[in-house]
Image (tube, rainbow, N blue to C red):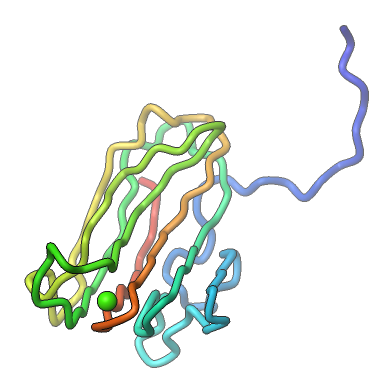
Length: 156
Ligand SMILES: [Ca+2]
């Protein structure tokens, strides 16, 4: 079967755009159940949470370059949750193609707090050449605030 010619859609970018958040959340799809901005203009990074009963997704769709190996990003967590077993504040990093691959799941509590950003990385070499959606997901429960700041997202 010969594929029919289709109208040119907005091209999917190669690799991540504005991973440093120097242009706010331009290039990202930022959704907050509470309708809150996901941009921290003081620290020039993304900010997820900081309110209770929230569900947020910060996502971007791109083509993983053919030489890509690692997804890198930095996070800085704050949390009032003293007991991880009681915390309903959950942060996930998800790579989606036709299915979702959860690269990381973290239940937030005070032990994860840091005063500076901490570098994380995940091997994404199996996604080379594929169109993927990277999603940073945070849900918070009804009490004890948690926040995840994200910066310097890159595919290398
Ligand atoms: Ca909480």
